[in-house]
Length: 358
Length: 163
Image 1 (cartoon, rainbow over the protein chains, first blue to last red):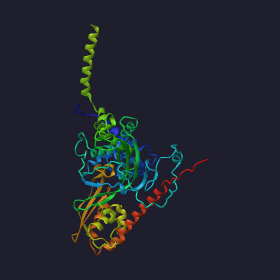
Image 2: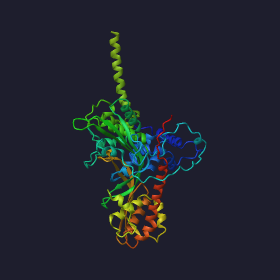
Image 3: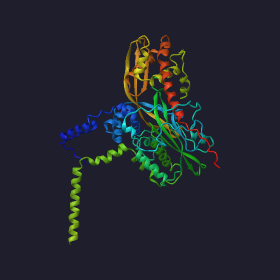
């Protein structure tokens, strides 16, 4: 129970003034520009966009600055901001097969059309701290270039599907549910689950994905493909009645390929776990794909025994803004609640002591 | 959604200024150009006709959708900021713009160019001074990035057996 109380305004004012000062830091240091955050802390910006569920690099960078680098607080700020904007409508589904690819790798095929393109990756770095970065801001030489291969890069899952070895996705053309407009209800269908996972907390999904690899749920995943790049967004303005491209956004897509032993209605084949995330967010896209597949256990007739296979457990707890709200509300005054608890414990204690004394 | 392939090639002749494909191409190019970039290109033309704002520029959201498995059922991925604007010219022509982000100037100029380019007499100059150069700059950026990506492509070779 919460009661309205007055007081504390001055303390709050002083606390926020101090926060502003601490955020700015030592005035002898130059302030960080939002454009610098957008550019040089790009992966933090991407994470805030994904979990804030709003693609706008500039706003996400501002949120990172305002939140002093607390990325969950930043996602919260972005979510709050989006509620102030009207929604013009929904885009056509992104066609990731037409992505302008910066990175595209497959762990299942060495030689595949379009090739293995590493892109700007941390993979194969030695993870040694580079003290040159602390020493100054030397501009690195431009990265090498080469003639691009004009051959398209088809999806790996499509290569398998053509052989009949990969379960085809089904598109019934249904309007997908939107958990920002109607509360989640269970069982949640796959489009709703994917929406929740796409905005879910990277750490939570990483842990759950890892749990499926360690045996909590029966997953045997391979990375069929990860691709990172820009994809055009197509939208049909009602006043025009035909689709137009309204820009391009960066996304990361992961197709996990999982063995499926078959069921009464389906032959043995591979099935997919799918991850799609705003920005360059490989760990998140992979985790999402693992958890998407584990959440399909029920519909594929597999046993559902592990946390990562439990829709309610996963979907109700993967949203870090909601989770923060409920965990952090414990900080709010619970004076009256606690007063009654206090009475209770005192009474129980007296009774227990009396009983012990008799 | 198969317009994309055709309208990327464009309609340099601009014969049918109201038909969707050439107009879609122009709008797609303007949506990828910043307000300052469009303004700089417009500076190379005689002053555009006066316009009146019908709506906006105003910023809102578009829900971006994806597909399960890349090609399955649609799902809501998350929103993106979009700025839109509609303007009218004195001759009654109306132009619209929906552009990613929050650049109000970009949306208004894109709507103005959309309206102005519907005038078949003005179109060739707009195409030559605004649309084609913007499109070329965008293609060059895309190609520069593709060239960097190509340099990171792995060329596998099979190790010869050591004896």
